[in-house]
Amino acid sequence: MKTLHHTLQTLFTLTILVLAANSVFSQNIGGNGHKQGSVLFYNVYTSSVGSPDQQNTRLNITNTAFSPVIVHWFFVDSGTCAIADTYTCLTGNQTYSFLASDYDPGVTGYAVAVAVNGQGMPIDFDSLIGTEYIKFASGHQANLPAEALVLVNPAAAVFQVADSGGTLVDLVFDGAGYERLPSDLALDNIPSLVDSNNTMLILNRIGGNLGELTSNIGTLGGLLYNDVEKGFSFSIRTSGCQVRTTLNDAFLRTSPPLSKVIGTGSSGWIRLFTVEKVDNSPQGGTTDARAILGAMINFNPNAQTTGQGFNQGHNLHHLIYAPSAKLRMPVIVPPTC
Image 1: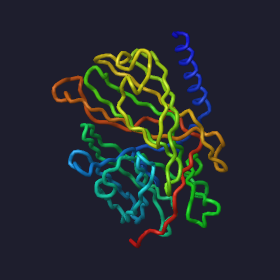
Image 2: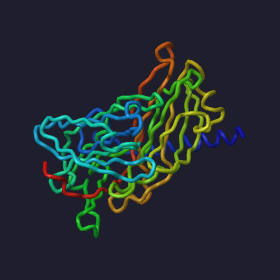
Image 3: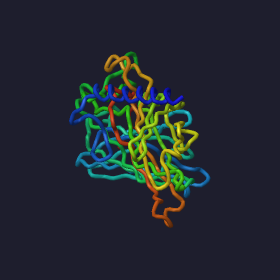
Image 4: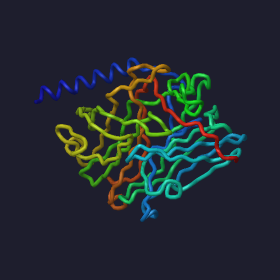
């Protein structure tokens, strides 16, 4: 059994090294929450119909340019991967905030905001920034920046879908069109379960059709590290376009279990990567890694009474970028601003 464990860990490590060797590093390789972009991803939103005071999200978007812009919003339901959408008209230097309970009540998922023109076509407008305040009835709360993607070259970023009559386009995130999206993520500063910490993990698949259904995440592989650099391999079979779960021994199957790997008073980190591939042709490859984004939020009920207890969260760090990712969206003429 020990030999099998070491073999699996070696295979995971070799896979990561190969992916790292083949990844392309450039100035405009990937998005993050500390810059402006033409597309924004909000990693999680939620609200409760019965108790919006306890569970809700305030999303914010700001236009840092002097010129106005139209934003097409897409809200992805984590339960069904179905889409609700709306528009926001922003004047120059305007900021706008709204509650998830007003726009998509009772739903938990993730949101996408795309800068468009008066015909509903995505445009080059790298002047959008965003953030969100989110709270769950479980006690998890965080302030998460939206992850911004720059449009590098309009001619290589937006492609009309054949036979759609101009009603569908593909957004291509390959570093030549829009910036790349990650396929490998890191969860750092994971506190010990033994110290009453409850860490929520959120993962989102970026792919599929924002006019119908987004795609599933599929199988994930990973390595859990303790604070003395020892790694433990695992794999996770997921269903749906968003994973939202608590890190515990049942979800993260390692030997020894998570609660033993990260003992009291210590911390660890996790490297996660997608295993299954996606066909992004003709703009991308036929076996590209699936693109994912995510966040983690920790809740400790003893945060006010113990030095080991902390609350809050952050987006997951990008480690390796998928060579290409494709996200289809409908082109709908927005209402007059």
